[in-house]
Image 1 (cartoon, helix red, strand yellow):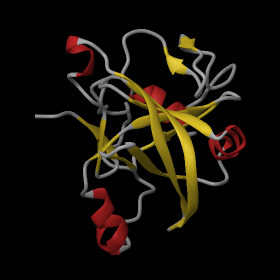
Image 2 (cartoon, rainbow, N blue to C red):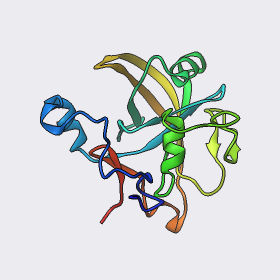
Image 3 (tube, rainbow, N blue to C red):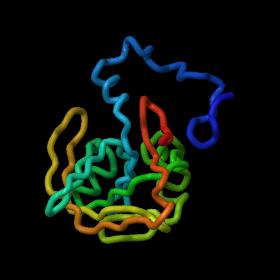
Length: 179
């Protein structure tokens, strides 16, 4: 069996037996897979949440957050209804949480039942010492197969010390560690 229990799923296969062979995959998807992406949990009042690995923070006054969100997700419905949302970077070891909110892992009792949360005006945030941003929705537009969501950053909380030293990254279809 493969997998290290933290970074890789445990499986009897060395590769995904159902994956399209590399040379047959669309070039644009192959390019996207080669761009390391931070994994963030976006939430909104409702509550609703979604794992998003296409998040960009733009400096400025005011600061902006942009991300690609599936318009068929519960998050899309909740954030457009509320007009606000949370962006919380995930940490190494939170791959199961990321998979749960991406709809790839089971969520017995619902997505928010297995962890501790605290409510904010922007949506739920994982309890404890966390980095997160509370955002107000500015606009959305179609972009690729999703919706580009733009929000103004209204509130930022930065975790202290070692809490943020190991981010969860996604690269070529897997969670990776910083070297």
